[in-house]
Length: 359
Image (cartoon, rainbow, N blue to C red):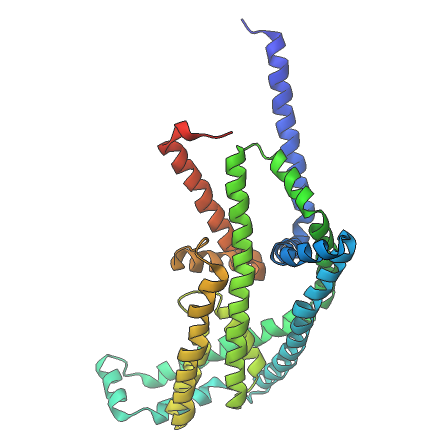
């Protein structure tokens, strides 16, 4: 026999959980178009918070400290990004027009490489069953043309989405100010609302902040340095559109195990194959000893060992994150992976030592 008095609280609890789920999903749905602005607002607030706190201790005025921190972010981050974006769009426009007019064709470069290839290499290709070198040459040239045109088109489109970028930019700055000023109170409200043990909240919160800080401070700084160094080498060697290829190298350097070498490596091979031995050898040495060492030397210092994940996990989650979330995915993908590992570490620890629960 059921007891009516006990059914009412259970029904109320289920109804409240349904309402909580609906309003949470609805709130997330409304904010989804501003995902990039929110993500970068949170990321920059976490990275630059030590500077804000230092200014706050000196000035003892939260609003002034927040405004000064945002001005510093604009000078250090936004102004250089705007300059690079303008140069990128300019070079992408020229390159795109060259593709349309037929002035830029990778078939010509591939033919030059084949013409300069030693006879013993060609004989080896024939022994390996690659007799139809003309067909292989055409396919390689077509693939390179398509890839380069795709890069130029994407870069051109990136610069044309001006209105969306401006709106997102100002939303990010507006949000960033309040995250700087009221971030501690907001963080406390979120922690209080989460139905988890305090130890779990601290562990997950620390992991979230560490991964965001490591991704922005470590990966982006390394990517910018590698792209800048690669672009400088291309500019010295008088290679067309050095800013465009610098941005591509910076983007690819976010992927472990492949990185910027996917751009400067083929260029070095082309220089060697077409007789520019000094330039080709110099680019290979520069790419290996300067561009490559930036990742090996700086990333451990900037990222640290706390968030170290296997390279294959970082690679898969970075590519998967960008496939799902676009450019923001290189932050969201590894972040989800780190939180996934942290949650399952908690589950494993709970199963091993259930008596060590702390409230």
